[in-house]
Image (cartoon, rainbow, N blue to C red; front, side, top):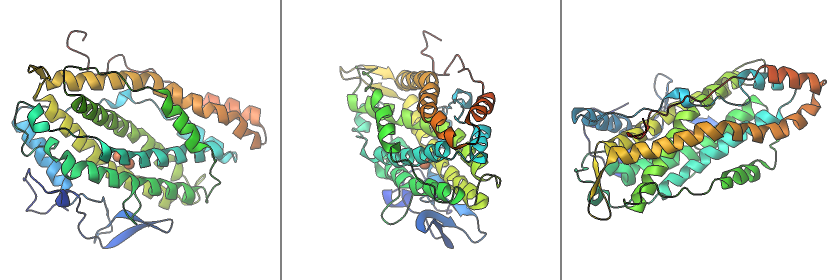
Length: 357
Ligand SMILES: [Fe+2]
Ligand SMILES: [Fe+2]
């Protein structure tokens, strides 16, 4: 519910960007008070969007009026979820819950990791860009945007965020299942595999490259998460496999709507950087477009290439073993594999460097 007074403005205080306004009813999930709430018409309203949503719209129209374009990540680049919706339902119908419980627990943990965005170092951007930054999303990263994002993902004080909301959806749908004890350990092991990438643009301030790289990475994860949300809604709102189809499906829908401001502020700030010129450490200049596109291209290429096989490898290991609880594990595995989705990553990321495009 944007207030008339924030509509069209481009400068906000951190308190404004963190303000939720009033709800008629809070969101309680599995006994935990969560962020967001319901308005007079009973519609869910995402947390911290009272001013944040109109602010993002204002920054986007300002970018457009200055001739900048809003970058877009093609959804076709997103690898399908594994197990897919039909495979997950097949497992649950056969009493094999562990792989689905594991997948949902991984999602909740990864959501909690989102809080790391508040620790991203933001250098003095005004001195690193040639063009002015007043009234842009870039100028508000440290002034509310990163903090709002962190609170949305991992909760704040006594209020649950996405981590707790996914746990609640899982526990409602699958009736407080036993959580495998090794989920976090294995997830950390997998994350540890990738080493920190070398600087792609050593000519610019290293903190600036790290910040833009981190934001690009999170943006891609957020866009790809859209497929995970749809998967969660489809599986958890099916009464055949979910004990609480409305509660669990609705919860994932609430989380899904909270993600919209994340995608929008990140693509806006990256687009603002892309429309500007960056000062290099040796006093020269480089087009922001070259830097942002270079970072996004590298991330998208890597994610479309390895994410699918990483995820499959990880799940496959435990899958065959988990299936032993079914009455005919061998036949179940055959049926499971027959439902597999075909997928080939698109040849282009859409951010190819100019000379290689
Ligand atoms: Fe989230
Ligand atoms: Fe998010």
